Image (cartoon, rainbow, N blue to C red; front, side):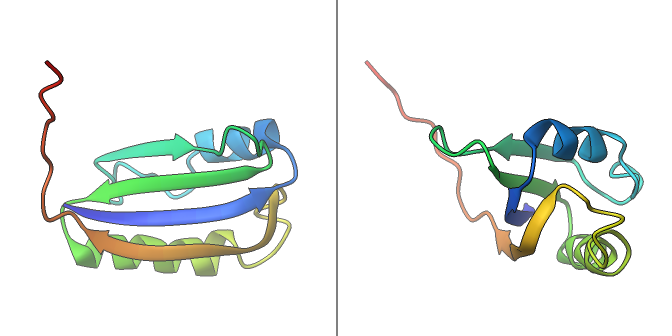
Length: 100
């Protein structure tokens, strides 16, 4: 599995979430299989997002579209503060821990 990780500060989490939920890049049609939204428990103005893809190419393409079509101006991404930090990673192992 290939995962696109994105982290950034936000002006207002509710505003960011509304923009995210509007799904301007059509995540499903873009190859996103699942996503996780997280934030530090002591920092409500920071978002960590992980989006899973089947292929590296789909993740790279989606990231490019985010950078060029969504994040390019404050008008299209008014809730984001500063430049998002991104990386594309590959999952090499998932293990379940038996908590007996």
